[in-house]
Amino acid sequence: MILAEINVHITPQEIELQRQTINSIKLSLSGEKRYAMVETFGCQQNVNDSQRIEGMLLQMGFTLTDEKDLADVIIFNTCAIRENAHAKVYGKLGALKHLKAKKPSLVIGICGCMVQQEQIAKRIKSKYRHVDLIFGTHALWKFPSLLNDALEHSQKVFDISGEGSIAEGLPVNYDGGARAFVSIMYGCNNFCSYCIVPYVRGRERSRSEADILSEIEYLSKNGVREVMLLGQNVNSYGKDRGETDAFAKLLLKVCEISGIERIRFMSSHPKDISPLLLHTMAAEEKICNQLHLPLQSGSNKVLSDMNRVYTREKYLEIIALAKKLMPDIALTTDIIVGFPTETEADFEDTLSLLREVKFDSIFSFIYSPREGTRAAQMPNVSTPEEIDKRFQKLLDVQNNISYERNLRHEGNIETVLVSGRSKTDPDMLTGRNYANKIVNFKGDDSLIGTFTDVKITKAQTWILYGEKL
Ligand code: SF4
Image (cartoon, rainbow, N blue to C red; front, side):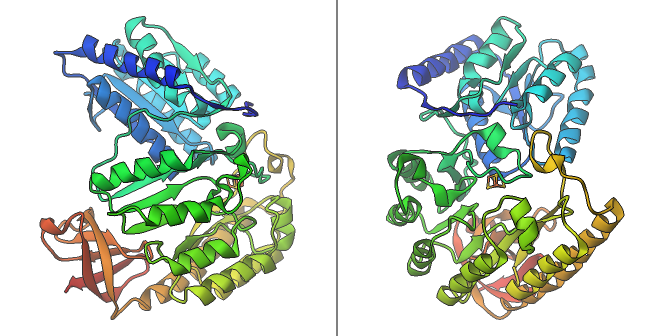
């Protein structure tokens, strides 16, 4: 297992070398129409990393495609959080064997958190010999050179070198919509006992404020109206440089950028969220009154076994302050069911906390052991059947709460940032309100990318419906 101990800033010379490689690939491809496909698994951070890979591919002259039969380069950007994410990737890699046999020039690459784990990267290297390119999260910035080695020299490329790094100045493929993700920091220092992230993404390292602000200014000039600031624990932003309250200060600076009307962020760790941050959210109109605050469990015993470093009482204190300062705040959280030491009584503590807080929605998962983490060594006190039952009960309880929370929007006039046509009902436009809830309504395409006032007429558990005013 690789753990990044050293944070390095990639030098401008190293970035320049990658830019030159991008140009030389572009030259070598000129005149030929070549396609590339990037498939992303996992979280928003991975989506943002894939946008970087796509940005580099576009600058090399590739056309992006979703059709693997058409592709000359296929990259899977993987996730390590749960076992089923691994199984999916193995299945997809296996299915490409036959495509590679038909088209030997096809370059197949796999990157991201899954292959940052040495034992997995080695397994793929030996068992999936049709894979040309394996690179970890810390080598992402070297993608042009790595791809060049695979393309030009038909080499098998393997780079999971483990130093935490920040690389600025490489292209990013923003999708052209009015919303964009902006990573403000990478890595995590928390070592929650179930989590693989600190091992595969390294220790916390914050981008400079200047780099973040100039990226957001660029986005604003190119039509972006809403930014989601990303980090494993945004409340730690700047702490690696010895700064305090740097995240709240950064938010204030982002508020000053003209054209940016909405600011969101995720994720926050309850141990690091400060009253100052909540006061800043409440005071600044551009910062949405919406907070994703991962809880994981409502039981103090389980929280301690998870190494979460807060108690249910502390969590409820934060929520009480958030609600006091922002009575309309929309709250979401993450819950793990079936942590090895979780008993029925512990699970009831989680349910009681859900009923007390009334989250707008939750992201819930059945615990999945990750090799190399502390929790993977803990014996299970519950059977899989008991855990499945708990999971179903959790969903039933939360679905009722989510519906109840959505009902409060009925009759409101809410501003929606319209993102496009609804995938499930193309007659409807779709967008998000301040609470990040999906709102569908009828309207014409000219509204896409704009803020539009919509009267909410009907609430369902996951969607709000409305009429354009
Ligand atoms: S805070 Fe905990 S759960 Fe979140 S990324 Fe860090 S170690 Fe994983």
